[in-house]
Image 1 (cartoon, chains in turn yellow, blue):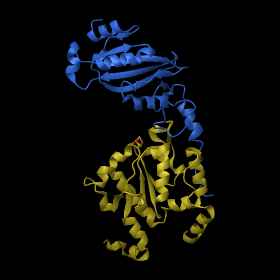
Image 2: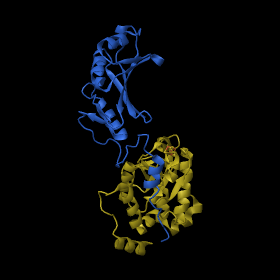
Image 3: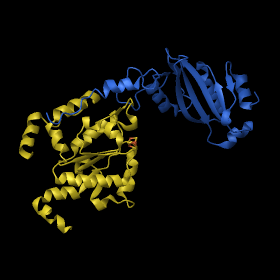
Image 4: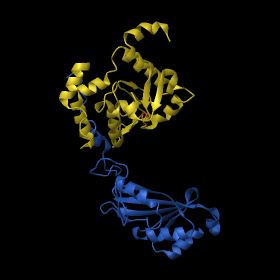
Length: 192
Length: 169
Ligand code: SF4
C-alpha cells in the first residue's frame, strides 16, 4: 500500500475502497466499445487500476458509456443506470456522448447524454485510446476524493427533471419513477 | 447482347432491359410485376444466394429503385453459362404508391431485408408475413431514409428541444 495515502485510508476508508474497486458494467454501445476488450485484458490490463468488468448492473459502480446512443439504447442505459447501487459513477466515452459527435444530425441518436442521465466525466476523442480510459480513471479517483463525483446525488436531487427529459424522447416508459420526490429529498437530506 | 444469361432472360421475359456488367456484374432492369418471376428464374438458374436488397430514393424522378443483388454458393452450378458473374436485379416503384411484391416466397432471407426497407423507406411489400419495425424505436412522419426527410430539422425538433438539466435549481 502506498504509505502517502495512509491518512486518506484512515480518514475515509469507504471512499478509498470505492476508488480502488471500480466495477464497470459490461455494457457496450457505439463503436467506442472496440477499445474496451484490449483495455480490460492483458494488453492494457485495467485491473492494475482496480477496474474490472462486471456482468450485472446490480454489482457495478462504474458505467462507461462507450459511444453514440440510439433511442433504443437510451432506454436500456437508463434501466441499467437505475439498477446500479449507489455510489455509482458514469463516464461518457467519446465525442458522441458529449454532443453527438459525427452522429450529431442523425435521426436516431440522442445527442447530449447528460440531458438524460448524470455524467461524472467525459473522455474526449473519436475514439479515445485505452490510455485515455486510465487517465479518466485517475481523474475519477481525484473526483471521488474531493466528493465531486456526485452524479448519483444529482440524479436523485433532479430526478423529476431527468425523468421528464427521458419521457420526452422515450414517450411512455414501462417502469414507474424510481424515486418519489419526497423520498428522494429525504435521502438527500440524510446523506447529502 | 452477347451474354448468355442475358439472352435467355431476354427470350423468357418481356420488358427486361439489360445493362452490360460493369465489374463483372450483369444489371437486369425489370418492371415491378416481373420481380418475383425473374427472381424465381434466376434462382432456378443457380443464383441461389440473395446477398442483399437495397433501395435508392430517386426523388427527382419520383420513384424508388429496388436493387436485388444475387450470387451463388457453388461455382459449378453457374459455370453452365461459361462465366461467373453476379446479377443485379433492379426495379422501380413510384414514390406515391410505394409498394412492391415480396420476394420472401422465393428467398426466405428477403424477410429482414424487406422489413428494413419498409421501415426506413416506407415501401410496402405485398404479401410479406411480418412487416413490423425492425430497428427503430420511434415513429417518423416521413420514413427517415427518404430524401425528403430533413434530418437536421428533425434533430432540432426532437433531440435539441430537450432542455439541459438545471443542476443549480
Ligand atoms: S465518438 Fe467516434 S468512435 Fe465513439 S461512438 Fe462516436 S463515432 Fe464511434
